[in-house]
Image (tube, rainbow, N blue to C red; front, side, top):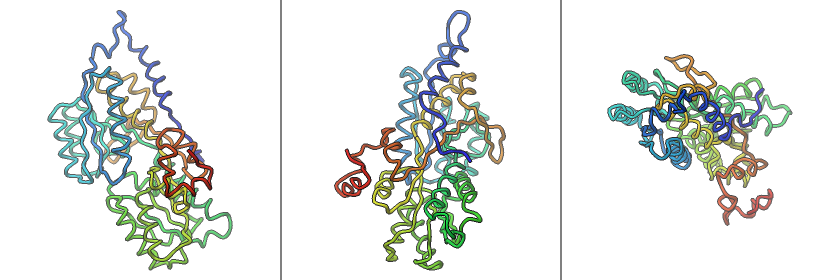
Length: 369
């Protein structure tokens, strides 16, 4: 079993680049980056705004890193599809028409995006799938270890249920969007831990990862299973966890079952502090975003030795095999690990978590400013 520890650090990425840079020196000391130039344009396409991380972390970190890697001469062109697959295809096609040098894209619908990825390939513009593995001839993939995400969530449920007669424990699964290939991998990872260990009483896929839809699923599960019979809730992310918890409370359930999540969103961290949510999965966004920016800039500049050094893993989608990949590991976030994850890494300050409403709960677990 793999441990849920961070596999790649920002400093390690920087060291990799520094080491590889020396291999690219020509006889006269001129680097390939100088020959290629720093004035590259990188496109960034993010999928939606339902998940807070994309606007709060991914976009600004990638933009800052592109500037850093290009000595301020590079440019980031950004668009968010807001959950509309057709809109994202148009955004990608426009970036191809504008002749950007490389594109990072987190797909709304992996399958529907494939024709636009193919157009980019035909125009010699590399597309790197970011956080979600798009179909089509992508040139690279940067993401978290999604199977491990699901495994960590499944392990957390088993830990919460204890080692007794848990095979009769009824678990409700609220999975992510069926158009997002990551959702299937999260589910697979979770089931690798839960199958034959618990009773999966109900399982739902959730269009658009929408918290409101997750709440509807939860209400349906409460009716079908019985409000006193639900031992745990697997929610694939924090937004849906919030929707599920709201539905549980609306049904009059005061002793909430353990509910999982993912993304370490601030409201989820606060729910973990109070005990309403059992856990989330902390994904170190700076590492993923920095790695993606570095891969995009290097491939845009033609610095393939450095690009290959970053992309040490391999992935495949429905149409392409052996995709150069950078997979970043994750960690469970519980009441016991808030300090060592989101606070230590500067994602949130203690005062942001422990607002007036949560001060007493924070003090109970030793979380003080």
